[in-house]
Image (cartoon, rainbow, N blue to C red; front, side, top):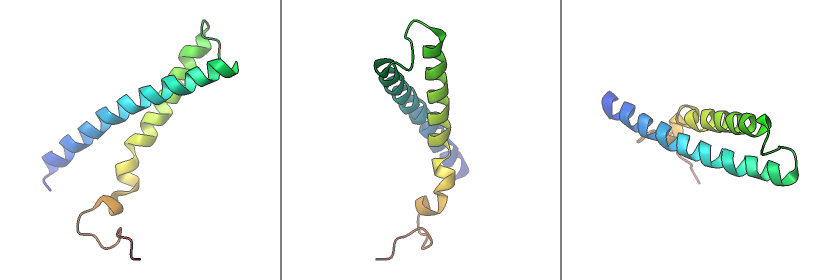
Length: 82
């Protein structure tokens, strides 16, 4: 696979990771609002959104690097042998 294709695929992965991170952050923050840990009118709401978005985005962005052997085509190291 060419380098330019890998860079484009990683860019697409980052865009998807950003969308998923924002969605997860909104859901988690709203759960915290319902539980009473976060006040929707205060600054804690925005802070919680930013923290959850950042953590989720970083976790999703590093997945291709953490599992690179499993995603490698033609590699026997990442294949499950049952």
